[in-house]
Length: 484
Image (tube, one colour):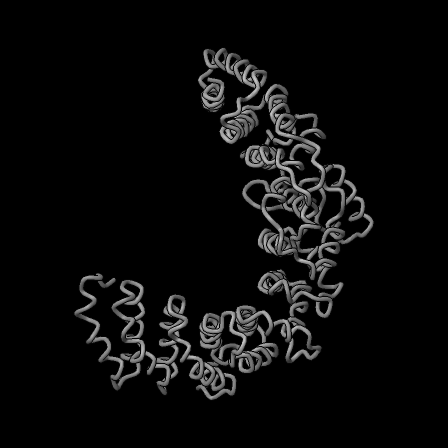
């Protein structure tokens, strides 16, 4: 790597190499300039016009290297590079028309990496641009890519990203068309409903790239909704995470609680470092999922196993799909925080304040996801239950009930990990409620637990016990400050 302090003495020589007679020298000069740019942007910025000439180079390898340079530079200087639009359109037209040498064909697709780089640059240049002249050539790229396989799928994915980076009015106009050559969204179900896990992942990823304002019944078919449901229950962790990302994009004020339940439920399924299907945790074989009767029985088991999830996954997705056009711009985080704290309190009441059963003591690495998220939500948002709001449903709990529930959890749950979660939540709330004091009864419960652990420490020097003692001491120190 060239040191930044010697770059100024080398730039002139590298720029002279752009006019060398041999194409490999010109290509490597552009690669060097790209490295220089990442190290010293201001030094290379004045030479953009000279570097731009390489986009007109008759040798495709040199032109491709120039695209690599501008793909990096456009992220910081998109406004200064608007003049690149005509040459990018010309390059894409040449590639799509097959005017590049045959050596640039890859699995029947003409120079897919050049097309992807052009699209990436166009996405930056046309960001929120209503009068973009790039849409026709991007649609030509889409039409050509929709006829190919393998590398063509990557080009198609980049087309969707590019169109969604333009002004929303453009994708809204395209999604209304019933012609498959003008509406790229009509091709998404082909991937999302595929039995091939790689294509399914690509299809769900495409859905995540689409502007939610463009979601409509014109292309959101029943098959596509079913594919999303299947992805949410997939045993493939990558597919399930993508489906959860998509579910989060469906969030509205009306369906917030259902979707939060589903996200918490997925978090609860995470064991041994990866997301696994609920069927594996219930001891069900994946092959039997094809049996509809068994699948319905399993859904009933899931509802009883996780009481807060009253609806099936399919019902939640269909409910969210009906509200695609009703995304509320007035949605605020405070409302969502109150819902999260209320849901956490409901879980504690349903479980009689005992979450030790959620820990798998036989697992080599315990991950008490449900207990963690419940006490995290109460510690972060429990104080918001005192907030009043006309649009928030009537609250079942208040701050006093949250503190009492945490104290009960401290007495009921003997697991040291859960006790540390509870003490962390109490400490957060004690800080947020300052200068108001924490009730003496809560402090006495924590002192009682400290005395018990002091006795245990004399018999055992467990790190877990010491951790709980430290968290209890932190809470008592902050709580006593408010009292004094």
